[in-house]
Amino acid sequence: MARDPDASLVAGATVEARTAYQAARLAPVLGPGLGMILIAGLGVVAWVAGLVWLVRRRGKPWVPVGVAVVGAALWMIGLYAA
Image (tube, rainbow, N blue to C red):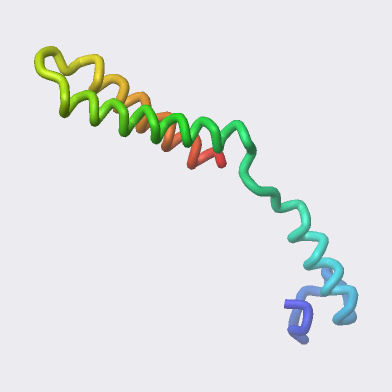
């Protein structure tokens, strides 16, 4: 975008000025936070554990289904926020 002759003048009149502007705009992009990575990982573990528990257990399935649903929700929240 810095080499585009029709670029916005807000970024600057020279290629160097536009390059510096674009670099400054891209610099604050951060990666995911550690907390959200841990929540997503815990969610995947709970989801899979709930499904395995459901398959292996006979009788009332409410607890393993609840664990699987909460795990899937945590996983999705962690991925969305990360």
